[in-house]
Amino acid sequence: VDFTGGTATGLNIARSMAEAGRVRAYCAELGGNAPILVFADSRSVEEAVDGVLFAAFVASGQTCVSGKRILVQKEVSTEFRERLVSKVQALRLGNPLAPETDLGPVISKTQLDRIEGQVRRALDSGAEALCGARRPSLERCALADVGYFYEPTVLAGVSRDNPAFVEEIFGPVVSFTEFRDEDEAVALANSSQYGLGGAIWTEDVRRAHRVAKKLRCGVTWVNCHHRNDPSSPWGGFGQSGIGRENGPEAFEEYTTTKSLTIRIGEAKENWFG
Image (cartoon, rainbow, N blue to C red; front, side, top):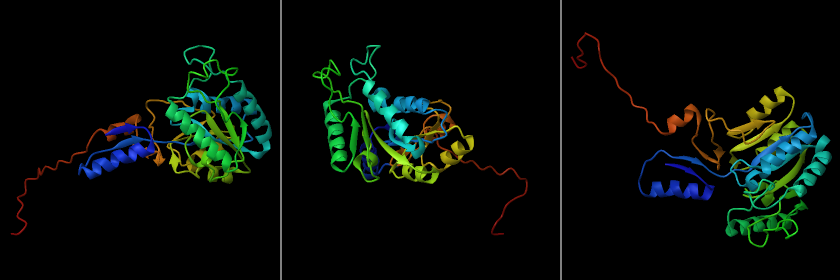
């Protein structure tokens, strides 16, 4: 069985197979809550902001590895935050088939209501909306009254137990958190039940390798996001799933190893004499 979807559904599938008494191989790509770590030694803040914008808001934030938890080093956090909010506010909402559109709607009214509820709980728990956190007006989006649109949103003042940090918000919503040093950045990134995707922005190749090794993410990018080579394994840790797709590892999910032993020696065997 191979499944891609939400963690709750993935668990139900595994439970159903167990209850049916079926022993089956199971590969599942489930939820994600991807951290993006932006270090002060990134080549430029502007480039990192553009990368985060793409990571977080392509497909209206509706991918399993969309950037959700934006972690930025203190030395560049003010500039990064200002640039990010300015660019998010400039994103154009509308018909996703139109070339001039940056963000389309979310998948359904049910999902739109879920996003609204999650953002409301995040705000009630102490988060601050730097932009968005609402459905768009007709001035912002001409299709606002007929589509399931939600304004791209940046939430700050988010603690580790805030819903915006803990939960996967499957839509155009990110949280912004400042960190002091590498150790704190890794601790924040790994403070999640999910472990599918993550990204690091730095010009220090040693730091890139060091941090990537520490991150509890099955897929990690450095100075980019959403790149997928079919020869590279894809999958997560924890509540993000089990097994791997793509790469040679994927063959192991769809094959079973057999063992064959043949005696070719000439000597007779008589164990008990």
